[in-house]
Image (cartoon, rainbow, N blue to C red; front, side, top):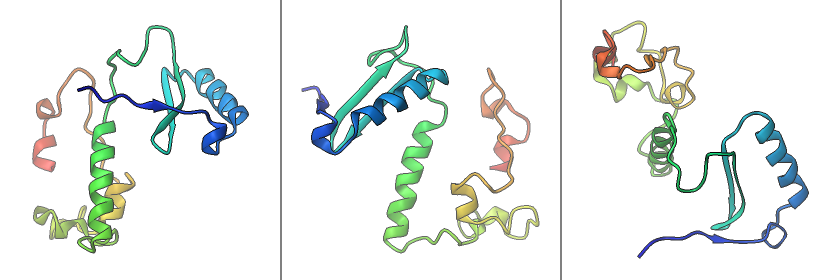
Length: 136
């Protein structure tokens, strides 16, 4: 059994089709390759640049990390298990006593405002970058 999204008309789901048209034009103008709008579990707009489509795989960078991490953080906060203003060192004990990291909060990490630089270099895995694994 394969899951298939159902589609819907924007108007019937409370969306203005003219605004969706403007959004689509803006995104295409910026070079967006794929864009989809879903509302109440139904796809109301789907657009693909030439060479892209619903069955074409393409690089999503850290999208999965943001979705899974963001959802996990949201549930942990809702359950009172974590506070965004907690020191990250409460959860990463190796950071305790490190003056460059002990002031970093969960909020800083969640909003990419911790001051920690990305270690990504294209065509090289993080494991191949000197110091990266030790830092995290």
